[in-house]
Image (cartoon, rainbow, N blue to C red; front, side, top):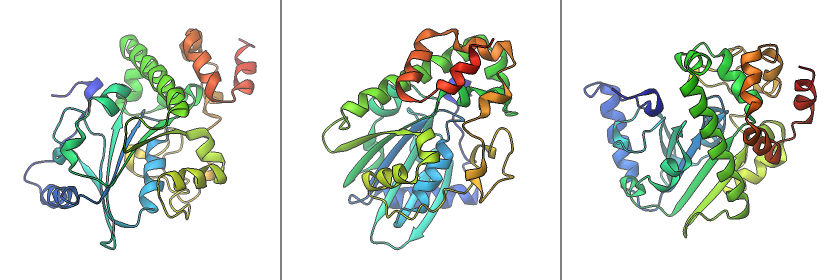
Length: 281
C-alpha cells in the first residue's frame, strides 16, 4: 500500500473505464510526434486549475494521467481526461503531486511515455501563506495530516522550499536539458494576470482562448473553503486571501518561523501585506 508521501492511486484493473483509459494511453504514447507535458505542483497549489486550463486549450487528441508516482507504470494511474479535438496533434500530460523536484523531473524515466516532438516541464508554485492555509482547513485526510502530523508538516515545508529553489533556478535557465522547455509557473500571477496567462500559453504552444480559467474542477474536490460553489466564476475565489482565515491560529503562524521558507517566498511573491499582518502577532 502506498504511503502518504507516495500517494498513488490505481484504477481497478478489470473496470471498463480502466480498459478504455489504458488503451487510449497506449494509443497516444505510440505517437512519436506528440507533445509531452510533465506538470509538478503541491496539493492546494492551484495545480488542477492550471492543468484544466492547459487541457481546454490543447488542440488534437489528449490523454491526461493524474497524480502519478514517479516509479510506477504510467498506464496504471488514474486517467482523468480523454479529449479529442481532431487527430492532427497528439498530447500526453502527466501530473505529479507533493514530489521532490528531482523525482518529478530528473529521476523520472520519460522513455515510459514514448517519443515526443516537444517536451515541456511545468513547475507550479503558489505562495506558502495561502497554500498552507488551504491545506490547514482542507477537510480531506491530507488536511488532517498536515495539521496534526509534525513530521508530515515538516516534509511539506521542505518540499515547498525545494520547489521554490528549482523555480528560481528555472527562471535563469529554462532549458533543463536539450529538447525540453522547463517553465516555472507562478500561480498567484497566473490567477490574476491575463497577459501572464497569454505568455504561458505561447511558451506551451497552446492556442490561447483562456478557456477553463473560470472552472473549478472535480479534481481535488474544488476549493478547501468553498468547494465548487463558484464553478464558472473562479475569478471570484479569494485564493490570495486564504491566510486571513487561519492567521489567528498560532499553530498555523508557527509554520513561518522557518526563515528560509519566508526568504524564498519573498524572493518570488509580493507578500508585503501578509507580512505586515503577521507582525501584529
